[in-house]
Length: 484
Image (cartoon, rainbow, N blue to C red):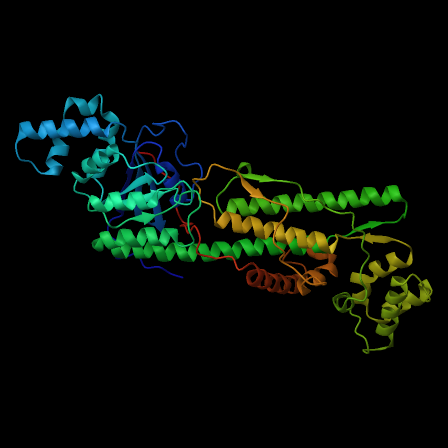
C-alpha cells in the first residue's frame, strides 16, 4: 500500500513529559519499536538529557518524539514562577516560562525542569505520562499547571493501566477537574490491540492542523503490521516445511546406532527452531536475551517413509492405475511397509526403470534403501505439532508486547494446539515425501512445488492462529534514532 506524504511540510514535534519513573522512556521504546532506546531503571532521574526519536513514512520524517527528564520539584518550581510573575506584573504563561528559562535557577537547581520546558516550548504538543498506579497528589496538579503555562496542547497518557493496582478512575476525575478531558490509556508494557491507533487519533483531535500527518502515520503503521505478521507466518511455515522434510539414514538396526542417529536428527531440529526464534525476534525488533524459553522436549520418533501416503506416491511418480510399471513399484512399497519383500531386488529395479528414469534418479534411492534394510529416521508428527504451537505462541506474545517491557518473554511448553486431527496438514505431508525441501534454492526443479506448499501452509497458519495484525504497529522504514 502506497501512502502519500507529499502534503506533509514539517514533522510534528511531540514532547514526552511527566514526573520521574512514570514510563516516559518505556513509551518511546514502544512507539519506536526500539527496546534499547534510552535507559530504563527503577531509580529516579535516570533520563538526564533530552533524547529524540524520529518516525518516517516513505522516507519522510512525520513525527519527532522527545524523551525528557522527569520533573522532580514541581511544587517549589511553581512557587518560584508565581513569585517571578508577581514581580514582573501581568504576563502570559509563555512569557513567564521564557523569563524563568533565562534566570539563574533554571541553570542551577531547576536545570532538569528547564530542559523539559525548553523542549516543550519548541514542540507542537506533549504527552503527559502518568503512572496510573500512583495516587493523585498535589505535585501532579502543580506539574500540570507548570506545563500548561507553555501554551502547548497536553494529552494525558495513563500508563500501566493493565496493572490491577491502577487508579484509573481517580486520575480521570482529577484530570477532568483541571479541564483535561481528552485522555488516552496506553500501557507501555502490554499495549491494547488498537492502542497506537487510539493514541494518534486522539492527538489528531487536539491538533487539527496535523491530522493529515497523523492519519498517514496510522495508515503506515497498520500496513507495516500486516506485512510483518505475514512475514512471521512465512518464517514459521518455512521452519515447519524444513523440519518435516528432514531425514536421517542408518544402515544398522543396532540400538546404539539408532540412538545416536536420532540424537543427531533432534539436534538439527533444535538448531532450526532456535534459528526460527531468532528470526521472529529480529522481525519484531526484540533481542535473544529478551526471551526465556525451555528446550523443546523432542521425542525419539523413528519413522520410515510412509509409502501409503498419496503425496509419497505422487512424488515418486507412482500413480495407481497409470501402468504396470507404476503398479509394480507401488507394490514394492506396500510389501516393504508390512515387512515382507515379495519382489526380488532385480524386479524392483526393473519396476522403477519402467516407471521412468526421472523417478529412479530422484526416488529410487529411497526404495532401494528400504530393500537393503536401511532405515529412514524422521521427526515425529507430534514434534511438528509442538513446533508449530510454540512458534505461534511466541508470535502472539511478540505482537502483544510493548518494547518498554522489562520482564522476559516466556514461551511456555503448554502452547495452544495449532494442528489438530490425526493427520498433519497436506503441505507438511508433501514435505515428508520431498527430503530435498530441507534446503530451497531457486535452481532446484522442485522450487515451484515447494513454494506452493509453503504458501498453502501460510494460509493454514493464518486461519488457525487468528492472530491480529494491528497490534503494536510501527514504521519499518524508521531510521536509527538521533540524539539531541
